[in-house]
Structures are given as structure tokens and as C-alpha cells.
Amino acid sequence: MTASLLPLLLAVPLLAAGLLVVARHRVVQRVLLLAVPAASLAFAVVLLQLHRDEPVLAHQVGAFAPGVAIPFVSDTLSALMIAVTSLATLGAIWFLSVTGEDRYRFVPPLVLMLHGGVNGAFLTGDLFNLFVMVEVMLLPSYALIAVTGTWRRLGIGRTFVVVNLLTSAILLTGVGLVYAVAGSVNLAVLSDAASEQPELALATAVVLLALSVKGAVVPVHGWLPQTYPATSAGVMALFSALHTKVALYAVYRVYSTLFDGPAPWAPVLVLLVVATLAVGAWSTFGEHVMRRALAWQMVAGVGHILVGVALFTVASLGAGLFYMVHHIVTMSALLLLAGAIEQVYGTGRYERLSGLMQRDRAVAVLMALGLFSLIGIPASSGFVGKVAVVSSAAGAASWQGWLLLTMVLLASVASLLAMQRLWVGVFWGPPLAAYRPDSPETGRARLTTVPEDVRIPVRLWAPGATLVGVQLLMFLGAGPLMAITARAAQGLVDTAPYVEAVLP
Amino acid sequence: MIIAASVAVLVTGGVYLLLQRSMVRVIFGLALLSHAANLILLLAGVSAWRGEPLPDRVDPAVATDPLPHAFVLTAIVIAFAVTVLMLGMAVIGHNDDTKRMPATGEERAT
Image 1 (cartoon, rainbow over the protein chains, first blue to last red):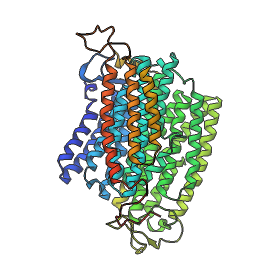
Image 2 (image 1 turned 90 degrees about the vertical axis):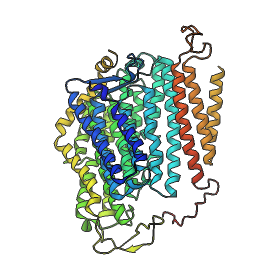
Image 3 (image 1 turned 60 degrees about the horizontal axis):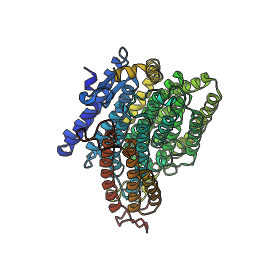
Image 4 (image 1 turned 30 degrees about the vertical axis):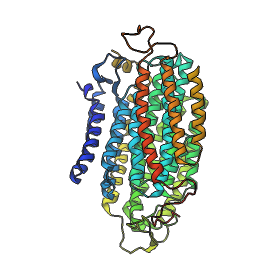
């Protein structure tokens, strides 16, 4: 019964998006924009409860025979990811509506279409359908990246479109090769098949290559720090919570379903993860703009998340998934707070900002809590996530484990130092004297003296503050959340219940 | 074999065009690459020596697999939509050869 409701998670956002193109009343737009992701969040929480007793729910779309139909499958991992991404989407939408960006023509339908595509990608149990869902998710993003902006954003949008389209062609090729070798693209049919067939392992590697470009794994990460910071803060928070994370979810799903244990080329993956950690953390030093630094930290976060796949034990997969949940929430919070600062003071550059600690105490405290979480200093979800990742790496007791452990620790120190530069530049120093306000015509204007009483209004930092609060709750409730991610990891390693539900 | 050779030609041309400066050429390059991907999908259905998948004309045992055809159809629709969008971007963006921004009064980001 519940299983047949699964396609609604895709259908409702898409229908609502279509409706919002026609229904342009402001109240209707805002209500639907908030109600649809909230409904997804509620449904996902219900699913999480259901999966305690019944680990996998599957629905064959169109009631075709199992194996022929496109299955929509929900297990603990899918439900968890839908819940977290819906939450982050709500935060970003809240911020977009405070800054007024949701009143641009077509922004509400585009955001809902993005949300629908993300839900579909989490639920689908078919590789080709995954490609379609990724495209459903990317098409609105091509528009969103430029819709709120200037000519420069249009140029950045080109990079984004070209990289993603090229990657989609590679993904499509990979799916074609998988079909050519195995005769099916149904994940349940393909379960553990790649360990026995070397050709299928190669075809899967092409799929994973495409997914790692979309997930920004070094050395194919270059597009992310180039494009993301050029969009507006709200859109960047939306993208950071959804795009790379969908790709990483797909890496987790495809890798653990098709391979029964680590892939033959697992050592290569370990080295790539090490490189991702190193490049992400060190490159943060080179940036002098808040959101550009955070974009590099996103690359480092991808490395932490993929430690789970690289080691491929139940403990490491669970730790990686916990880190992914933490990273989505924390990164959204930081981006929204940085966006609030940019919105008021017109810039995110370290050298243009100073002394915000005296001016905006609340924002400084929130930003500090968010940065603690990003780096993994206690009393934050990042601390729990890093401890889990490090202890699972130590538990693996292999050269891969020790290498990854060392690199996670080194990357944490590097991130700490780099984030201190952000802190010193933005929050310390003499009170801010002059700033560049947004001019209504061009987006930029001359330097102007800051009046004494200018503060970041509460409504601007409230979305970020809420997500920082969620992050603290995740620290306090780490036990139950760990249990959920451990169940999700168990479902990835032992695919028998998944196969049984999809192919009864 | 002839399809495999076509894929090779399409990928070669696609990569060459993708590395050009002009947005329109990049779009053509991506179109060629997506055609190459579509041909690879078609190959997965073993169209080389099998009959068309029509049950009343061809014995199902020697007919091609129709599923890759459906894949290709979906992929073509998606590629078409994205190509239109990119052509739109090519029109409204800046001039690729001179890098001259349209006169909007916007200051350069410093």
C-alpha cells in the first residue's frame, strides 16, 4: 500500500512545478514552494519509521512484471537522503524567499522540479531511470544558476551546462555498456554481478566515472569551485545540498549493489579519495572570498564521504553516510549565513569585511558553531562524523585504512587553519567602515560609508540559524541517527532484502 | 563494425569541437558526443545482424532488443531540450571571440 505511494514523491513536485508556471499569485507560489518539500520531508520520516520493520519497499511503476518494470524502491538510505535533502531544500527556499529571489519569474517551478528530480533519483531502482532523473534535476539547475543574476553568471552557467552535459553523455554510454554486457539495467537484477563478470565491472567503472565527475571527486572536481560561488548564496546552498550529494548517493548505491565487496580497482579509489581530501583542504587557503573557500571545503567533504566506499566495511559505510547527512546540513547552514553577510555588506571578500564580531554578535556565534561543525570540533555533528570516519578507518586495519585516517586528520588541520583565515578576515579587526552596496540597476556600486546602526536583520540569518540548530540536534541525537545510518549501511552491504523486494 | 567506426568518428569530432572557444561549436560538439552515446546504446540491442522488433514480421528469437531503442528515444529528447537551452545561452551570452561584455553599465568584478 505505502509502496504504491512512492512515485508521488516524484509526481507531486513535478505537478506542482507545472501548476506554478500557470498560477503566478504570490501567496500560491510561496505556499506550494514550502508545502511540497515539507510534505516530502514528512513522508520520508514516515518511511524511515516503516523501514524499522520492513527494510525495503518496492513499487513496480505501471504494474509491469518485476524485472521489466521500472522499480521505485525505498530503503533506509533512500528515505534518510530524501528527509535530509528536503530539510536543506526548505532552508534554502526560506532564504530565497527572504532575499526576494523566489519572486523572479520561474524560480518557484524550477526549484520544485529540481526537488522532484532529486527525490526520483533517490528512489529509482533502475540505472537508465537514474540518468533520466539526474537530467530532470539538472535541467532546472541550468536555468537557476543564471536566473537571479548578471552577465557573469550567464558565462558561469555555460561552464556548468557543458561539464554536466558531457558527463551525462559519459553516464549514458556507461549505462549502454552495462546493458550490453548484462542485458538489464535493473539494479536488483545486476546485484553482485560485477564481481563475477570483469566486463560488467569495466562498464560499471564508466558509470562511476560519470558519477564522480558530478560528485566533484579530484581530479575531475574543477567545475565545482568555479561555478558554485558565482551563483547567489541561496541557489548555491540548494545546489550544494542536492547535486553533488545525489551523485555521491548514486556512487554508494551503484558500487555496493553491483560489487559484492570491494571492486578490483578499489586501491585506485582510495588514492582518489586521498587526493580529494588533500586538494579540497589545501586549496581553501588560496581563497579570499567566503563562499569560494566553502566551495573548496565541499570538495574536501566529498573526500570524507567517499571514505566509506573506499574502505567498504559496514562501519565505514555507516560513518560515510553519517558524514554525508552532517555535511549537507552544516554546509547549507554556513552558505546561508555567508549569504546573509553578503546580502547586507555587499561582499564576501575577507579584505573588504572586518570586525563583524562586534557588529553582529549572533551571526558570529552561529558562524563559529557552523565552522566548528565543518572542521569537527566537539559539540557539533561534524565531531561525531569525523570520529566515526576515523574510527572506521582505523578498524579497517589495512594500508588503505591508515592512509585515509592520516589524510582525514591532516585535512582537518589544514581546514582548521584555512577557516581561521576566514574568521580573522571577516570577524576580527576594526569595525567595518565602508562597503559596496547593491545597486538596483547593475548589482554593484561605489564604496559607501557604513552607518553605525547597520546590522544583519534577524530574518536574513534565521534560516542559517535554524540549520545550525539542526546540526546541534544531530550532535545531541547522534546515537539514534547513527543507528539509522548503520541500518542504511547494512542494507548496502547485504543486498538480499533489496533484491527480494524488487524481484519477488 | 560500421557503427563502432561511426562512434569513433563522432567522438573524435565531438572532442575537437568541444575544445573550441565558440559556444556554438561547443554545442555542436556536445551534439556529436550525445549521438555517439546513442549509437553505443543502439549497439547494446545488437541491431547489426538482427531484424526489426515487430512481432508479426520477425520471429522474436532473431529480433533486436527493443529496450535500447526506447533508451535512445528518451536520450534524444533530453539532448534536444538541452541543445535548445544551450543555443539560447549562446545567443544571450557575451561574444566568445572578443570577450566583449554587452553594455549594461555593469562594473567588472574586482
